Length: 107
Image (cartoon, rainbow, N blue to C red; front, side, top):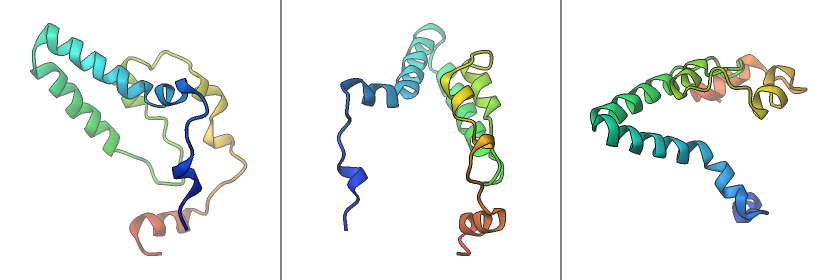
């Protein structure tokens, strides 16, 4: 069976734009930084982004990604996700041992 989710089209023209907003904003910031400071500045920032994204907590613990927010300059901004998308207040909590075994490929 094919997945129905893959066949769905965006319900609104701006939905795709909103989904890729952060990626587009990063690309614009890197282009501006390259024009102002040269090639080394966006490369260094991209390396720092990759290093920060690799550091994660255990799969059953919520990670705030504060280091990534700090690199992007968003650490002082309160957004929609900060208030209404708090996984610690989720009604469903996974089994820690099962989640680790799944991540390690033991299941």
